[in-house]
Image 1 (cartoon, rainbow, N blue to C red):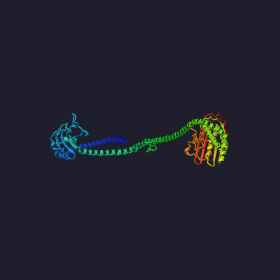
Image 2: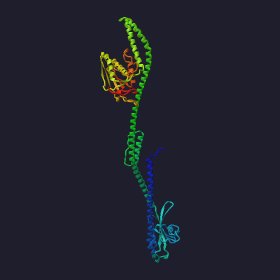
Image 3: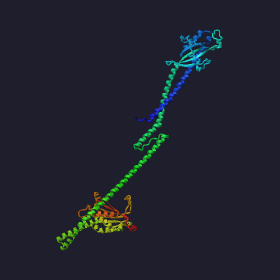
Image 4: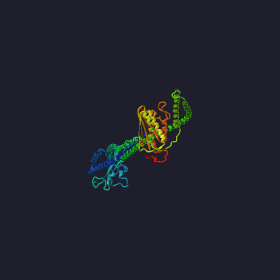
Length: 545
């Protein structure tokens, strides 16, 4: 069963209350009017009986009964008079509108004698309110009965024609029966009018009050219902109209304030979620970088173990080959074909030994000899060492040092090896004329904020920029892998950048590269000014040069 709406409940209650009120009001009006009309009819009937007595008084005094009867007959023909009788003191009907009633007797318990003879002694005076009574026949026809006593006045008892002694106070009564059909019909008509007016009043009041309730209650409730449904659906931007300064207006205003507060809270929550997602994304990227670094370290460790075993296995045979080949070369004459062949063997054997030595250096976990050193001085010495071979190839090397650069805690020889490897790679990447720029400066921490939980140490940066052939984007992620090289066969072992990467990581630093094919590459070496592992001896060496 569908729920009954409040509007229907209020309408039904209002209709019932108005109907009951109007029914009670109409009943009172009809009852009061009926009583008034009955009272008027009783007064009319009483006056009619009085008229009969008064109009026949003189004729009775002069003993002209025929004239008196004629007067009574004329009055009895008036509209509404159903019965008009003259009854003597002993109860005999001596005159009637219906001639058949003449001669019959009326008992004291019958109408209209009962009014005076209710007690043992008959009443001498009967008040007007007791002179009439309404009786209803089985067919619903109502009749108003009234009477008027014919008294034995002195003028009557002393007349020569009078038959009654002066001691008899009442000679008879005039009995009148007046029909109430006209009054009942008028009452019914008036009742219909009252009912129609009541129904019209109920409709008018119902419509008026309904419109008033619609404006003051139902419309604000509908606004609240619509707003609540939108809030339940997630729409917090729609405001409901404030239609007045009453209670509903206050509720609507409070509802709007609530939805505005909820909307602000949701926006703040969404912003918080977005910030959280960004932070999660940042942490995820950092974890991926850390995983890549761990994988790189594990790769280097596994390659180092393998390389150490291979290097030890190859080093002994190569030493024997180099020794015996050198002895044989000494026995050969210079310029001979055999001497040239042995020189080639010796040269290639030494190259193999150099590769094996580098492989052992890569695999061996060398303990750095750390101390405070001047990074600008280390860079300058390394550049001086490679400057002449570069000049022969028409490659210019320029330096740009920061004179206020603080000293760095670490192994100067290992850092020199890192710079050397990068400078050698830069020279080999340049075909024909070119340039290499080496720059030192303090690192801007705003560009690379510290990781959460890690102290943000001050760092120096070494930038090596060349105008070589550049590195393809697909190869940038592999240049620090062991034995990976993009050079021609015989020009690289693929260990230089791997070794450099391990050295920089051992110092708590970072090494990155930016490159564009055909324009050149730029290496960034970041080194902390003091040890991140807490093994620096003091902070005295941190002062500038």
